[in-house]
Structure formats: C-alpha cells, structure tokens
Image (tube, rainbow, N blue to C red; front, side):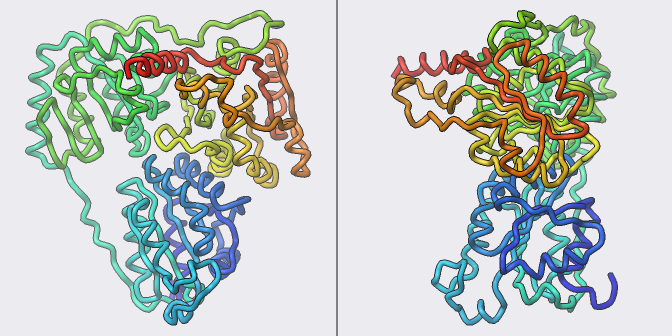
Length: 557
C-alpha cells in the first residue's frame, strides 16, 4: 500500500485484486467522492445503469460470470432502489460488494434532517435493513477501512453472499490512519470426519447397482464443476441437474441426462433419479422450485449430500468436510457402475419442420437449442421461458444465468447487460417475456450505449402467461391484472437513439430466417427478435404439468 493511500483508493485496490474491472451503479450527490476517485483510478471502469435496481441486477450477473462484482449507489433512495437486487443476490448465493456513499460525517453526528433520509435523524436505519439481506455490513472510516474492507470481501468470497459497505462522502478522500490485517482462519477439512464418511459411503456402495449424481446451484457458486465431472466419469454414473443448478454439469457430456423435475420433468430423468439405489447430491438447495412443489421423491436414507463445508450420508452428518476433499476421495472409493448411460433423448431434440406453421413452444425451443454455440452465456427470465429453457440442452462451456430461487420479474434484461460487460468475448443470448421486459427495458439502452451485442428474444404472448398458469382459482378471462400494454418491441433501439437488427416473427419459417440473420449480424450489432405467439396459453410441457398439478390440488381443498 502506497503512503497516503486514501480510503477510496484502497477500496478500489482491494476490488481490483479480486479481478473486478467494472463497477455498476448510478450517481447521486452522496457518492460523488466515490465516483470522482474512481474516475481517476486506473484499471476499473464505472458502468452507469439507468436505475439502481437494474444496476444491481447487472452486478449480480457479472458476479456469476467473473466470480465477484461491485455496485455503487447513493444513500437512502439509491440503496433502497437496489434493495431487491441485493436480496436476490443473497437468495441466489452471489458475492457482490455493495458500496454506499452517505452524507457528511458532521451532518450525521448532528442528526440533521438531510434529504434522502427518513427525516428523523437516523442515519443507520438503511444499514440495519441491509443486515438482513447481506452477509456483512460495515461503516467505513479511515481508522477501520484497512480492516473492514478485506474482512467484507473475505466473507463475500467464502459465504457467497453480498456485503454492504457505507462511507461518508467526506471520508473517501482521507488517507488511511491504520493498517489492519484480516485473520485468515480458513476452515480445513476434519480428516477423521472425512475418513469416517468415506468408510460409511463405501459400505453403502456395496449394495448399490444403480447410482446417480445430482448437481445444483452451489456446484456453480463454489466452482465445483471440475471435481464433479471427474467424479461422474470415475463412477460412470448418469448425471442430472436440479432447476437452480442448470449448467453446473457439462450438458454436452454423454453422461448428462437432463434436469430432474419430479412429477413435471422428463419421465426418463425422473425414473433414473428416483429409482437409483444411491443419489450423490452436490451443492443442493431444497427449494420448492428444485423439489418441483414437493413432488420430488428422493429418499434421504439413500442420499449422500455434499455441501461446501458439510456432508450428510443418510442420517449421519459429518461437519467440517470440504466439498473438494470428499469429491476427490470418492474418486478412489473403488466403485464403478457397469451399465452405460445409453442414448438419451432430450425434450427438444425433435425439430418441427413445417415452416408455415405458427410459432409454438414445441417448435421454437428446438430452434433455440439448435442455434446455441459452445461457451455461450444464456440469460433466462422468470416465466414461461424459465421452464422451457430448463429443458433445452446446452452446448459445452455454456453458462446459464437465471434467478431460480428469487425469481424477480425483470431480472434477465439487466442481467444480460451485466454478462456482456463481464466477458465481451463471449456471445450473450437473452430470453425474456413481453411482461418482464416492460419492467426493465431501460437496460437495452445501456447495452447499446456500451457497445454490447447480445441476441435478444422477446416472447410476446400478450401478458403474464406464467401468472395465468399458476392462478388456477380464477378463469383466465377474469385475470385482467395479467394483461399488459402492447409495445412495439422492435422499435426499442430506435427509441433509445441507436441501431439494431430487429425482426418480428410469427411462423417457424420467419424464425428460421431471423435466427440466420442474427447469427450473421450479432458480431456487429445488437439483435432483437420478437416471437409472436397467438395462443396465450401455449407453454412447454413442464409448465402444463405444473398447472395440472395445481388444479388437482385445488380440487382437494
């Protein structure tokens, strides 16, 4: 650290050391000193969002691609606007550093009734809000910054949670007054627990003919994909992912069988998983989404559940066992399944060839699957797209971004922007709905302004189709609240003062032509394809099965 390093410079030094080269945010009068310092700082660029919520979503996706991200907002109004995005990052295990510029120290000490406050003199109220949706909060000063900033980053990395740092506008340019040192205290594997667990699992495997591997969201967050792949190949077992863990395993791999979705997913996948003698589950979150509304039939007594720092084998728990260590140990456990996975068919392998036929889920999803390329970043919105895209087989190296748990409508468009900024060398594809994009369409402007060139698909099925499917109590015709205004989506780029390739398609043939053109042009410009589906209740089978289940449950009441 150079002599007379300021608080702001030290903060950016720490972020830069983590590989952060862009910080998202929105300017406000309490964060001017943060932004002025960043303006003069070499190696990190400020990316201005259209609002704080969208900037938070963009930072979320950036972290999913690069490992960590940062967001700058102003006090009160700015941080409250970003609150939903930060809560989503907490729910989804995303490490994000949220930095807030606050009023001058003297104003806070004298409890002035400052703008952007609740007019009660309490300047700590918003940090207290963030205590519940972050892994750590701290008020930075020149005296504690050298200790608090590394501590916050360490927690974000280890817990995979957002953290919150607030600093008064007049302290950012002050030199650090002390040099703190963060304690390492790295959790190590308990060798005795590891050996006992391996012995336990080995005993279970003596009676196993069919085993299966399940991967989920924490496989992605904790970078466990490689050891999981090595384990799968060593054991020669089929591999399925849960909804929130899609792309946690190479979907082009011959051992990958698809997404396990209980009563709603592929019958073959469901039978393979539920009839297995042993399930090795890695990084699972047993949410209602992953358990398919409780229809998943997984016997915990036949399960080895591997979490980042803990392990459960049947009813026995083994604490302080690192996932990397148990995954490595299991490779040498001496078990190898005799049966090969065989030829696996996926829901959208079959192409509907009738070019004049109107667009339907059965025809546009196979076309989407066919157009995907290795190393694509696929960003999917909550809604009908999230259920259909979960069944699309991804190519090798693809990254799949979706809010499987938090499911905030409008997330995907800013997230696609964040993904574009995180890696400008990879192709980004956005799949969103007409209802969703109306919440956060402003970030199309940010994409254009920053030279981003994603391929954007907007599913126009005239409203919140997902809500119509989930609300089985009221006739669809009476759900006026699920209707939305009709926008001219292909004019969005023009409205934002830029050019883009656009197409509005209604048939399979028109979609084929639009995809071909987009594939040719997306290196040069943003491409936007509006999919017009006439049948408002057209949807992938997964979602249709959910509605049937909900209707049956409603009858039982």
